[in-house]
Image (tube, rainbow, N blue to C red):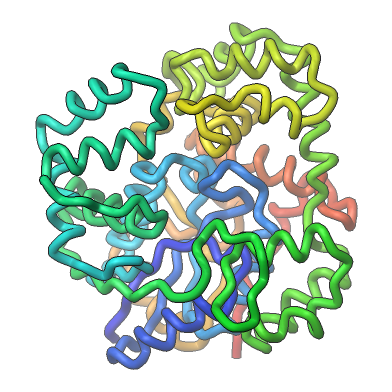
Length: 407
């Protein structure tokens, strides 16, 4: 069976994702395997729908297997996110990796990956960061241009594409890359445009800010079978999570605890480390300081952001602080993955993947290895998400769910 892996978020699954899957089918792939962010995304935000709902929509949209990229790995910056996802895909015995790309220039992306993994990149990048008030993404591409002599456009999918290629190299995997041209609106475009494939950002904005009948108003943007699944979840009060509840919980956390208490708690929970993951430069202190006067979570984030510290990074550090993730976790890889959904073809592939013993595949979250710090952290993360669901789900809601099996 010829399988291909995709590291994804499907937040939510839409026509752009369907286009990628159809293109891979046209290239002769029999089994499409997604390693999908759990309940929290790479920007440090709650997903628009829970991981099982999103996994179901992906199967309805044409995927065959969806495994979880568990928190906190799902919310690491591009390098950690890509490394963790590629690790899971490689451990399943999959030899092909597909991703969306603005450029689809394999040579350019590989040159960029070589530059990023070169000995001189870290120094050039650090020098640029120290030279002025420049954000990390801008500094990253400025360093790339300096080393390669090529102008590599700072677009989101290509940032991840470079990170995926770096991950393959770091993990010493024999894996072919299959880039698919990203079409439609820019990833951060927040307006729905019926004339082009919309971004997930625009779809999320419409769902959260307007009381939509999804089955009617999203049919131009989301494949019908996936839309029916998503619409049913909304009618059952499973989505979207309340950002008000989430924000109030996070804001109260920073109002009540000191930076020292937060760091010590994370180090205990993660089994080591020196600071909050992706911090080490005073972000936690900023959040604690501004929480004293902020009246909302949104105000706290806005006060804490600077040119150097993007909203996504502030979000991630805030989430890692609340859930007790230290920097030692950023140097680890997921010891297991949770099966979220499967088609009939997916079940056939799953049977062979289990025999490889490359990574533990957990069917029920409660069966995850007790000695892994990941279990405690991911269960707490899921519990926080559950308390923000509109149906007032129980604290242990996600420990009781079984994978979705189609046909």
